[in-house]
Structures are given as structure tokens and as C-alpha cells.
Amino acid sequence: MSTILLFSLGGAEIIAVLLVVLLLFGGKKIPELARGLGKGIREFNSARATIETEIKEGIREAEKKVEEK
Image 1 (tube, rainbow, N blue to C red):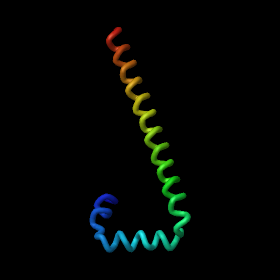
Image 2 (tube, helix red, strand yellow):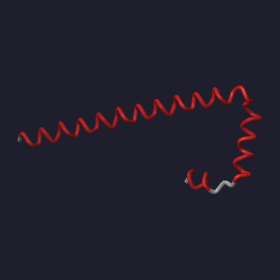
Image 3 (cartoon, helix red, strand yellow):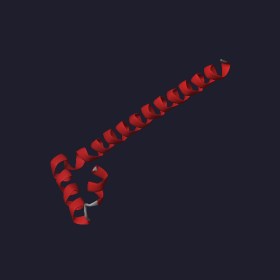
């Protein structure tokens, strides 16, 4: 649902949101916020990849046990 909301915004609305963010956080805080957001996204993707790998390994081990029987 949030992606639908994002795509329904026009250019003027996006500029208004960016202006409000600039006013609220100031020009010096925005790069800091962007770095934090980037770090959070990297950590999330790393955790997702680790979990995905563990799940695939578990499936392989389960398949080996089934084949052995």
C-alpha cells in the first residue's frame, strides 16, 4: 500500500515533502540521516542474506537426510 501512495505523489508534492524535511532537519543533518539510512539498509540486506543462506543450507541438509534413508 505504501508503494501505491508513493507513486501517486506528483512532482510538486515531492518537492514540498523535501522542503519540509530540509526545514525540519536542516542542511547539515540531512547527510547524517542519509548515512544512517544507508547503514541500516546495508545491515538489513546483510541479515537477510545470512538468513537466506542458513535456510538454504538447512534445506540441503534435510534433503541429504531424506536421501540417506
